[in-house]
Length: 417
Ligand SMILES: Nc1ncnc2c1ncn2[C@@H]1O[C@H](COP(=O)(O)OP(=O)(O)O)[C@@H](O)[C@H]1O
Ligand SMILES: [Mg+2]
Image 1 (cartoon, rainbow, N blue to C red):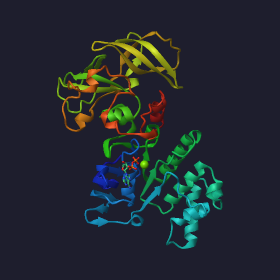
Image 2: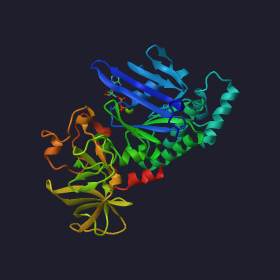
Image 3: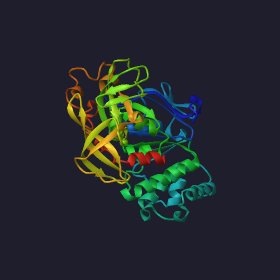
Image 4: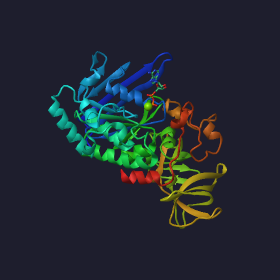
């Protein structure tokens, strides 16, 4: 994918938005580039600033600082302001926001104001055809299913041929059984039209499945931007490691020039050390896929519990640890055989799924994550979820709950994407 800045459809530079009283810094110095035809997802817990970021791009909010460029033009900056209707941005809201008293056709034509009626109708039919909704032209929104309404909302956003489509939690109102299907349909349509799109989601599964790149947000800031694979395999912070899927947080020490990191459970090589010098104490995130069950592995553990989830089995395994007696780690086992509680298994280490991570202190520019007063250093680190990351303490509500996806689901989503 091209990464030259001139290919950016949208570019944010140091964008900040505060709300009063407080102030609440909803969006804090965000910089982001989205390339033409790219699908980018802003992923993060409730209240981290996702919707505010979309509203800033659409022109429903004014930034306190920073610059927003859309299609090479400054849309918002210190002395510049383009109103929403001049930005060429289509928005799909969480609740679809269709006009209930207008038919499907009229809803789609609504966004084409200023064009002669005949042309508006032709364009509406054309877009509805792409979305396989032609037959519903005369129907009213209440006569459609949730998934169909979702597609009408997308048709309305696409009709004026926007340079950019913004979608705020577009799948959260759909029944679980419909959700994946509608999601895949919508993404298929976006790919077909080649439109650039920014999704907002608090669901890691959706984000990994549909995106070219994901920007993980926390407390108004972007913690990491990367492809779904990069985000899953190489999280750079404790927050990203624990918010996107399950992980095990281990203490480690940078060993040598080859980027090996020695942990209590063995050495993981060629991991990105995030610029840490040799000998540095670091925290390592090892995904459940980082311990692979095999004959004569370097590590032996005992099964404590298993959860069958389809493609894989997610197991808690007790491993001997030089530091803390025994440690419970989460591991993915192949579902092709049965396992007994108490059974001993042998594992090899898969460095691909290990990553040195910064904790909240390091993000703020402090030193070792294992300083004497660090709560993570004092106790054996438990399997995730459950490791307290101070950066998440304030999150509340169902969206803020860090839900680990069932074993195998994330891997499957990654395969699909
Ligand atoms: N109009 C507003 N006035 C005051 N605070 C707001 C306003 N809009 C959002 N906020 C606050 O900004 C933060 C980010 O909100 P939001 O962007 O809606 O988060 P998200 O979409 O990630 O859930 C939250 O703390 C929220 O309460
Ligand atoms: Mg929101």
